[in-house]
Amino acid sequence: MARPLGESHKRFLQTMMVNGIIDGAKARALHRHCCETHGAHYAHDKLDEFIEVINAQLQPMFMQIRKGMSEEDGLQYHALVNMAETDVTRMSTDYADNELELFRKTMDLIVDSDNGTASSTDILNCADSLQTKKLKKRETEHVLNRLVQDKWLNEKNGDYSLSTRCIMEMEPYIRMLYQDQVKVCHICHNVALQCQMCENPTCGIKIHTPCVARYFKGRTDPRCPACEDFWPHEIPEPPSSQSESQSAAKENTDPTPTPRSTAQTRRTRRS
Image (cartoon, rainbow, N blue to C red; front, top):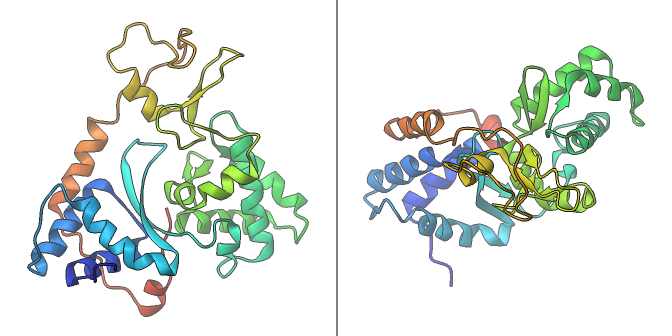
């Protein structure tokens, strides 16, 4: 029999429902805040067990608080995901048919690319070939802005990528739909879109950029962990200095969500 939720668990879940996704530092801070606010036992290394209690209650509703890594900064995130629907049909209440088709075509471009991104120009060109209903340039830009705001996509300098929340929630769908194109990271074994690839034609493994940074840290002669060929790509700095210090700083902030209207809280946010 699943352990009943205490008030601290309920407060944590409520915050996850409002935010949809939070980084690891904020999750740890929220765990402490919820326990101290409601007088529950707190242990800094028991966050996973704390979340397991919540997930046991969410299981009949096909929901789960899942932990995953961002392809961009390499930090851990916790997201409240819907496990019953794994494809874009989950978005049908918020987006029109032609907007969903645009999102699917954007996913196609991202998966087909070498760097896990799609340019705004390529996406705009897709809008002219939609089977449902064509979108004008301004309409397409508006849809892209919404997809970023709703945390299905990330945007940087006019290039779009799948957000951390999107990959965490839709990974089964991505693996199934693009099974001949998508590979998993050789290090963390999650879907790898923004990554580096071994140039040995008989190997071709992929490794997330943050995983590359961690795996090859301090190695003067980096070699592929699968075939041992020289790894010719630039080795980035591990995401432990600036990004983790910024994230750790959030642990000193109040993690309680800002009150929202009923309409806003009804809709789970995505990243």
